Image 1 (spheres, rainbow over the protein chains, first blue to last red):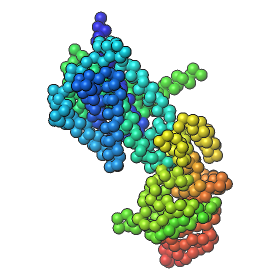
Image 2 (image 1 turned 45 degrees about the vertical axis):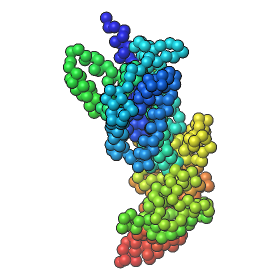
Image 3 (image 1 turned 90 degrees about the vertical axis):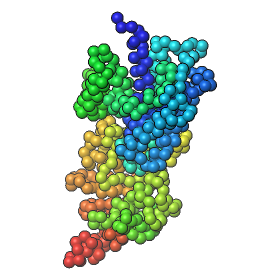
Image 4 (image 1 turned 120 degrees about the vertical axis):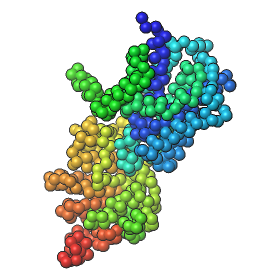
Length: 300
Length: 249
């Protein structure tokens, strides 16, 4: 019998990954911006929560919006800087990796963030007098926010703004001469996609109870990036499927296979998917999606 | 006069692509812009639509100075264009392609300059009307990348029309098309003029430009060498020299 706590802790990590992937999806999937330093933004959210809840004893209801606000503010600054500098393609990849390293370096070496010892312990969050302390509580909280973030994604993909972001991804010059203010929209994609980093970072901090710089290193940004690519860029179901892979695969192999081998297998899965389904498992032109639309037609 | 360009100059490093170029476009006319390869025709379009900033010179549209404005602002001033090498949004549907321009291409009255929800149905209806106008209505839900070249060229025209232009710049709309499609394209261009839109057309296919234009401007090495009605221009000594070499002039 598998213990409930085990399942709910996987579920909690899954929902946090999912939230990250939705944020990355707005930047990478809709706007086509290869931002490869997402954990840098998550770190901003997580540390904001950690500091506010430990040093100032602020409740969840305050730390969550402030974490989002802080993350979006930093994303605005970074996005504005990158777009002013006209970073695109490979240059944006390198720039955003640099951003991730700078954030981790600041957390490690600046005097205010607890350096390598991090910040903790973070008290359990309370909403309307209820303490979210068990992993069951957290998995419910996590899935609730996944639903919110997925809803935002869905609305965005159907809105005029979403259409503008997609146009930008497809062809920046054609978008610009169709009236899209591409610089403004790229910066906006950064801001919109960092909202999820704020939520995810806040939940992450509460769940693991203390934050350390190593949690936000570049490797983890690569994980978030690959989730979106695996699942299907620019789709609402893509990030969910994409987040399932890094949560389930290592767990499925736990116990029988050493740690390094687990990552090897995970990496091989990524390569196979990218080779055979370049738009992702649920990408716009993937086999699964074509199959689904064929089934939908059969019903009619 | 809808557009007035004075002494427009643009250099790329040592290469002067456009030099002291003057151009007037009258209300409601179809102006042909021709010249040998590398003459600077597309550079003129890129300068007019804000893709490049001119080194010097002025561009006046309906009397207003629009020199050096970014491309998205020029679009909202009601100048649209198509591209020599087509640039549809490949992974968007045909209708979505057109809707981008009707959402973003017209001057906006919404919060922060982003289109609002209620505009959506309007944009959709307008998109379908334009696709119908260009015989693409039955393809509206297909991805743009699955269209033929002729269809993609027409899609670009529909997208350009969706931002309600008063001046439309067409860059080689006939290149790569077969004779039947070229005939179709000429009819479309005349219909666009019928909607009260002024056109400036770059073209290499002589039969096309000769038939469609009210007036032709010839550009060579970035400078205007001739201007006038199609008949006069095609017999012009300088023009023959530019295209065929001195021996034929």
